[in-house]
Length: 177
Image 1 (cartoon, one colour):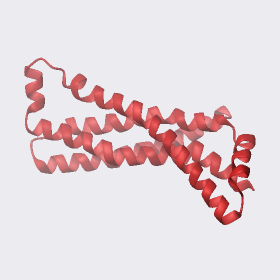
Image 2 (image 1 turned 90 degrees about the vertical axis):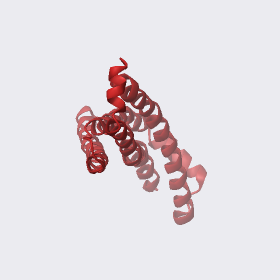
Image 3 (image 1 turned 45 degrees about the vertical axis):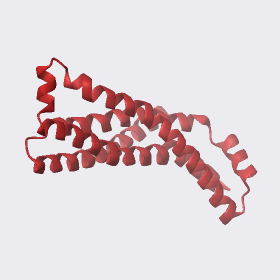
């Protein structure tokens, strides 16, 4: 019976947002670093500066805005998928029907757990975008540098997500949330 609460709290607070952020760190942080890095290698960023276009405004801000919009949305979709998966498992393995599952979630798992998880998403989005763009801007003129920076972007973004999630857990524990 307590499996329903365990599934609800863990999916709402941790699993959905962390798994989504780690997937985006691997996918988006690396692509940001690769795209900006290849532009730097081809001197397209220097050309932007010569034309009077600020590379930060043209390259970083749109990527940051996109992740700020998409990570909370994808986290919400991950919450729905996690809850449906949890409901299916408890129904098939523990013989706890969907009505019981939904009722236990409504009665014993508050919506504040969902807000805790969703509140982490914008912070993770900023970190993933910032690390990917920073690594892309740090690429020097060769392909080896590009490969190192793309790998560093993924590793640093995933490490930052895990570290920030631990800090959030300590913060929310101190706040009693």
